[in-house]
Every structure is written in C-alpha cells, then in structure tokens.
Length: 212
Ligand SMILES: [Mg+2]
Image 1 (cartoon, rainbow, N blue to C red):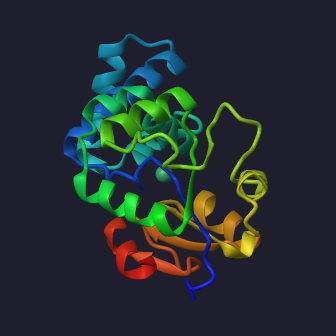
Image 2 (image 1 turned 90 degrees about the vertical axis):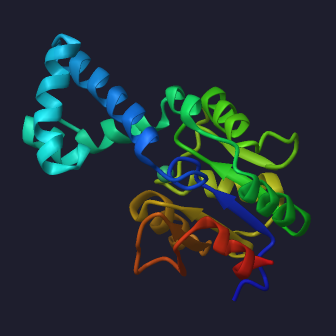
Image 3 (image 1 turned 180 degrees about the vertical axis):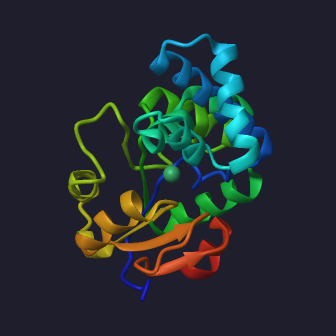
C-alpha cells in the first residue's frame, strides 16, 4: 500500500517529538500565561486556579473547561506551538537517521500550526535543520491550512506529486488525518489513535519498517 508513495509529510508538535514530563511543564506554564491574559488575572492567581483543577483532572483542556475558559482546546494547541517549546527539545539521533534515510527515497515536507520561526527553532533543537531536508514547509504564517485541505494541495503543487501519492503523519485525527484522507492522501497517526487513519503507529520510528 505504501509502494506508490512519493512524498511523506509531517506535523511537528507531538509528532516529531513526544510530549514528556519536562516538555509538559513548559507547556503548562504557557497555558497559565494564556489563561492569565484571557481572564485579565495575575499570573500567580491563574496558576493556582489552573493547578487546583489540573492536579485532579490531569488534563489541561479538561481543567480549562472546568474553569470556564473558552476555547480551551485551541489554547492548549497554541501553547504547544509556542517557541518556548524549542528550549526543552533535545537532539534525536534516531529520528535524524530515519529522516535522512526517508529523504533519499521520498520528498519530505512539513505542515504545522507553528510559525516559520518557531518551526525552525524546533527543527534545530531536534537536529533536523539540514538545508533542503524538507522540500516544502507550510507554517502558520502561510495562507494555507490543513483544515480546508489547502495546505495539502499546496504541497502537491510545490513538489509536483499527486495527492494520492502523498502520505501525512500527525497526532490529531481532526486536523492531521481527516482533511488529508478526504483528499486521497495516505495517513498515519502517532502519539494518538484513529480508526480513520491508514496506519496507527506506536512511535514515529515505525516508519522505517513501513516506508523503507
Ligand atoms: Mg500535532
């Protein structure tokens, strides 16, 4: 099923790296900052409120919902895409080897909700900043989106690869999997589960077996 694939694309956050405890702490600090600005509340006050719920619920979006913060899910996503994340990311030699091997056989691309600047900071931190490694990069500063499929169509144009010969890997069904699938792009989900995805991966490194 992967024989026809010519281009392989990736989401960045919670796809090229997995959320771990230290990354989670930076993420939670970012969320508290957003909460304090959304509510016009002092940082320490917002922090106490948030962690009172979080320590019980262990879920940032559930805590925000309990606190009555609107668009909690979007807020968590924004926090994850914030530049501060780059400072806690570490070089991943295994991922780098995988990407270099994939790049010899496929055209690689990125589609991310992060800005170009934040994306490059994260790629540098992960050790994936080789020039030309990703032949197309659609970041949040561009006019193209995953949700309406325009980002996938744009990549198809840039790389001259038909949508049916592309594969996309991400962690969220609603944003990474469904829009791609509806265009005929093959999909794989990592750090999440989806009945709609063509492949459910336990780790991104499983792409070696799938694609190489
Ligand atoms: Mg993601």
